[in-house]
Amino acid sequence: MSGLKLDISVKEENDLLFKRCIRKLLESTFVVGDKEEKLYSFISRESNRQDVSDYLRMIGFDVLVDTNVRIAMLKPHEADDEAVGLKRANVVAFTTEQYHLLLVLWEVYLENLGYSDENVVMLGDLIDKVRAYEVDVDSKKLSTAMKIFKKYDLINYDPKDKSEDAIITLYPSLQFGWDIAQFQTVSAEYMKNNQLEDDEQNADSDGPEEDVE
Image: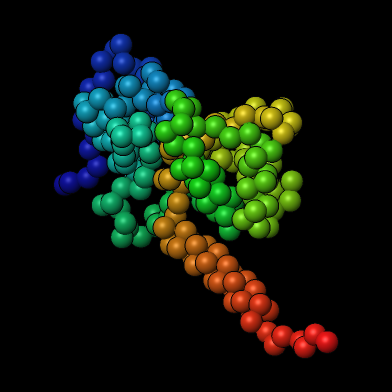
């Protein structure tokens, strides 16, 4: 009779790091090297990653380690994609407005990439970007979204500092915080709205000119 079987052996000196990695992934989805060096260094080693992966597969998850951007990410296990009763969804789920904000944050991340060791933006500059992209969020929704992004280690900041100069650290995990289907829907909606605005502006500029006497 076949069934689930778990056969891993974690060294005593690695016991605590193994448990912390599992709990961190289940709680926050990501382990970011720039934020938690010890946890990332542990899980990025092939043997440790395999142990963590084997453990997570028992509950329908797996772990992806990207050494280029130094993150580890919890993800659904591919073998369970068709399993009845297991939700086929991205581990992290956001509202449409929050996806719009993620797009803005990712744009800022890319703009800042390579200029310094840390990828950061000031709160005031971020709010200006949000307004420029016409993201429909008020201060309360923005605050809620930022707290969620911080929880999932997409960004880091001090919630008590509400000044325009407050520093927000952007992590490369931002690029993995997408449910692909919803991302495509949000992107298509955003592009459609921009196209409609461009068409309206062009129509206004191409309108009949009045005779000036």
